[in-house]
Length: 134
Image (tube, rainbow, N blue to C red; front, side, top):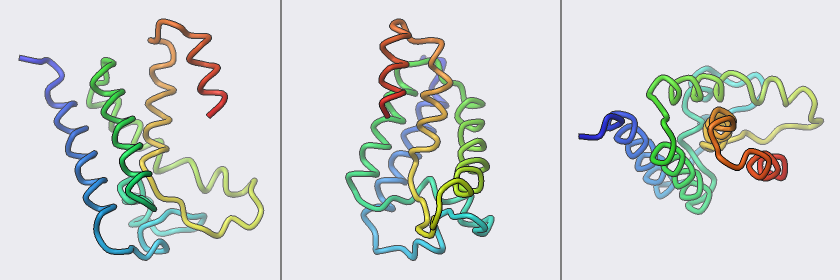
């Protein structure tokens, strides 16, 4: 039995929900997106909504790749979600003029996970160079 079964099932559920939500009707991005001064509801839900099926699929694939390849525990998944919903827009939005479009997507959670595995990868300089590029 796989020791990380709980984490893998959680990642599969998040990926499936994300892709299913991207297949459904057009969402009101002011309701489900995150933006400076947005509601708590939108802040908690924005990682699960995406602007397109391609965006959702790439984010889901990245999430599954990280969880299935590295030793990602459930607490690290939860911590990456908490960091992603608390920091990005209110912090970065103050530096970007005219930031009026809401942000959606699992990208922030995935990038927090990318940062958390940066010391576990074998080819650290190569990995850091790609992260800098992105």
